[in-house]
Length: 242
Figure 1 (tube, one colour):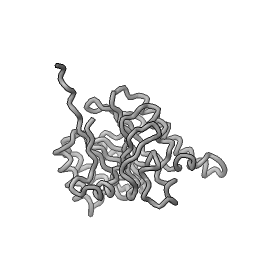
Figure 2 (cartoon, helix red, strand yellow):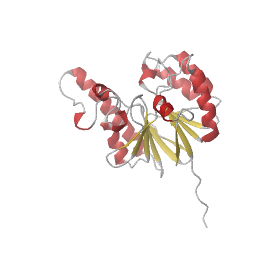
Figure 3 (cartoon, helix red, strand yellow):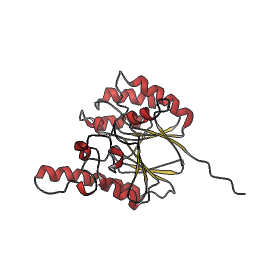
C-alpha cells in the first residue's frame, strides 16, 4: 500500500498586540504552539502601536521559534508610520511575511495581504463621489488584487489565504453593525473563491464570530486572540491539519 501523506499541523492566531506589558502572554503562547504545530500563522496586529521597540520584542521571541512562522501585518502595525521597519524586524527573525509574493512551506501554499475596509456584499462602498471616497475604495480594490496575484502563483494542492481584515460578513458578526464596513471587505473573498483556497484566516474583529464560509463554501476563520481565548483559554489559537 502507498504510504499515507503526513498531515501538516498549523496553528493560527491574530491580534496579539504585543508591547512590554503583553509580551509574556505572547511568550507563553509560542511555547505552547511549538509543542503542537509545524507552522504558526500570525494574522496581523503583531504590535500594539506599530513601534519598532514593540516589533523588536516580537522578533526576539520569534527568533527562538522552532516551527515555521508566516505572517501579515495589521492596522495596528501601521499606527506609527513605521510598518516597513516592523516588517524588516519580522523578516530578520525568520518570519515569512506575505504580501505580493506567496510562500510554499512544507508543501502548502500561503498567500496573504493585510486587506482593508469597504463593507460586505451589497453594502460594499462604491468608488463614487468625493476623491477621498475614491481613494478609500481604491485601497480596498488594490489589496484584493494583490491577494489575487499572489494566489494565482500558487501551484500547491492546499492553499491558505492569510489576512488581517475579514473577507466575509459572517465572521465580524458580534461587533456593532455600524462598524462592519471598517472590519473588512467582500472584495477579498472574490479571489479566495476564484482560486479554490482551502481555508482563509483573518483577525481584526475581536468581538466577531469564529467561523464562516465564502459564497462557494471556503471555510473562513476569525482567529483574533480575544475570540480564541474566549473559546478555549487553554489553547487560544486555531489548530488545523492540512
